[in-house]
Image (cartoon, rainbow, N blue to C red; front, side, top):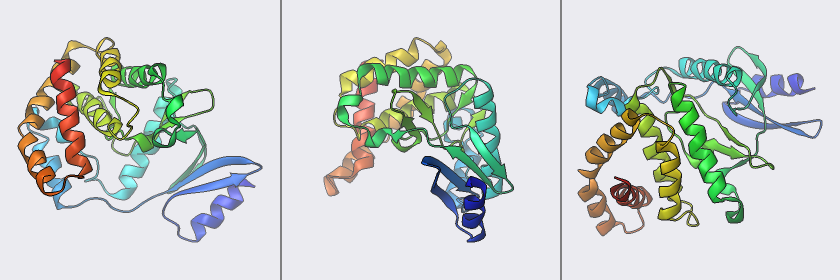
Length: 250
């Protein structure tokens, strides 16, 4: 029984996300995790109260239980509103179980990452943002694709309800950065996907993305300096590539 297997894992004090197979079906057990609150993140939360820096807001200053419960509530909310998110099959104090929703985008074969799939991904984020929700830290590992190319989002610990335009724009900036890890997704393909999002959200979100670009562009020299010392530094490469892309978009 699924419940019995989950209880066994919980009793062993396992923390984090665990794969469970029950009657040939794959499930994921998430148990209240580690405390990610630290000095830097608390500083980030503090300065995010400054309006033009609000895109730096983070939920990681909350304790682990608060973040866990926040994600649980968000999954129920999004599921009730018709979004492709894993439905909670079982839940209890400090844990919940969701059904498997497919392969992480980062592990998807190149031939399946089509222009239509990218357009659907950015349309999904547009829908999310038009519901006044920001994911918080979208990454390829948080995007699942099933056998029918249906996209689902996971990991909503950093999400925000009643999100402002800066937080929505931050979603897209971070998503564009992480898409740099997929060599088959060219700048032109990312630009086309970005326009899909732009055409479905308000001008305020687009203007906020421009503000984030201007802020991040001031740090371009730092990324270049890092690359002069560590030519393979991924974060610096992704930042510069994303800034170059946005220069074309604007």
